[in-house]
Length: 64
Figure 1 (cartoon, rainbow, N blue to C red):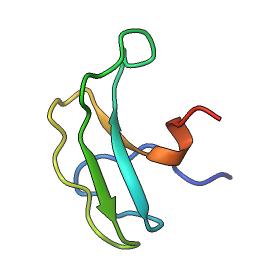
Figure 2: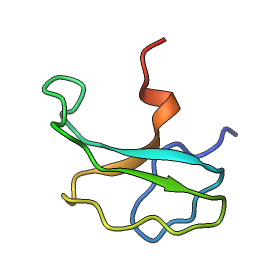
Figure 3: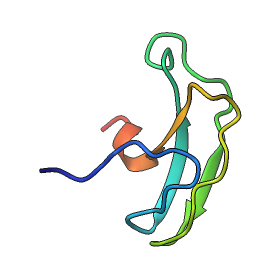
Figure 4: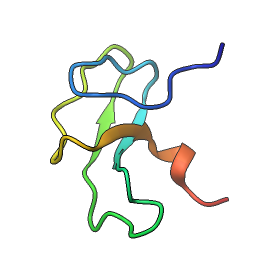
């Protein structure tokens, strides 16, 4: 099995890194000025600005 890639408030970060909010329609419309947080492994994710959003590692959503 692969590593979990979407996280909710209260989950713990699996790795150090910058995490960014991602949402249901962000692929089409984009989220304007999404929250970004820097966490260390084991830190807890904070609440999202919207219940339909999740946290994802920023390097997974950056274009190559």
